[in-house]
Length: 85
Image (cartoon, rainbow, N blue to C red; front, side):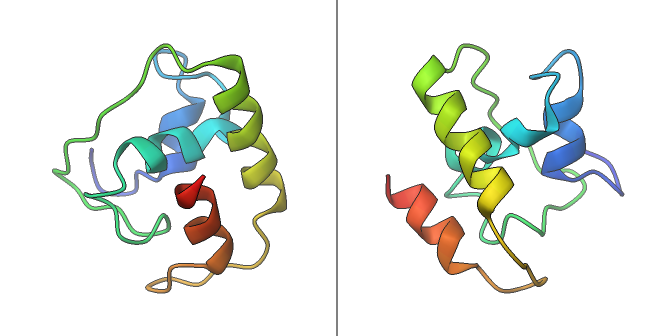
């Protein structure tokens, strides 16, 4: 990762998912490395699940579209609920 990267942009890349709304898949796969989905850092090495199930994709997209307001440095309750699924 480089400065300016975010989960949204990473998920949107054609070599990753090609859909920015699938960013929660990256967050969930790296929940031990990423404390706040809104804060990732240059040099972090993230795991990308290149073959998520259709059900996992649907849940991730639903979360991304309904996440609600966010703020840097705070883990939103909706993110905690998503990770607990």
